[in-house]
Image 1: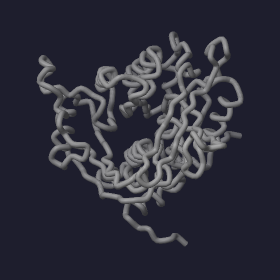
Image 2 (image 1 turned 45 degrees about the horizontal axis):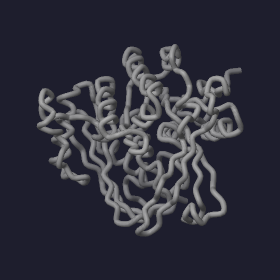
Image 3 (image 1 turned 135 degrees about the horizontal axis):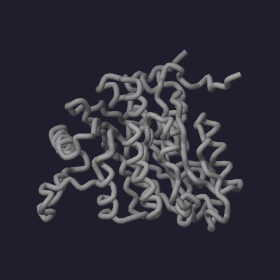
Length: 361
């Protein structure tokens, strides 16, 4: 008898895969500071893992590839993903010989409250993923059965071997005809701004769906970088006209890009934010509704935005619904503890997208 997952949407032909590092997250309860807490709440997360989890919960055939140590922590991370219907067959459980430090990356989150912002402390050096030797890895075999690949700028920042692996994945996905989405996701504790811009810009010729407008070079003059970047001086909360101009310049420089989307955050305090988004698609720039909300857990909000847009594109939503669904996905994630958006009903997100807050009976 053939075994199938009844939670997956049978009508969809999309098969999604993403590649990255999964981390153990340790959080003091009740908004406490690390220096005074006596215990931590443990969970797992990471940008690419969060997106795989969110899509799987919405019924997308979703796979995650990573390397974790073959110990209780690594196995626990895989079990968490599997419990959210993420396919984990390609995941490598490494031996101490393959990854000598043999550890799962960790990060500590102090959750913000009121005027106090959240704070992340990484402890991820020499993780199994960053130590694994990808030389000779059969990327074509990994990607051959999928229709969509998602990558981020976090993974190449972990090690030179990871950067080479990400670039090889991009080139192979392009060769195989996969839709490729990419989120720059700059992390200042992992590499410099210039390093991030140099590498992520080199990724752009292989990208179909781009999240965010940084960290990428978009020079005013490719032959004279002293003339600056087109994005220089553009505020963090741009006008429609400013954002439209940047999107158009991206597409002129990289005509392979079919969609660009970025969310814009207005932080009224550590506990209350507003979000909206801009999206370039099919020759036009679209602006979403503005959502104002109270934050329970902000981490993973950008990943929820990305997963929401990917879901909407896979299901061929009209452009305005695509961008509004993506923002609503991010907003609803802010009300859920942990890194991932575990919402398993697209109607819940659509109701929020339409600003319908009534109880559902």
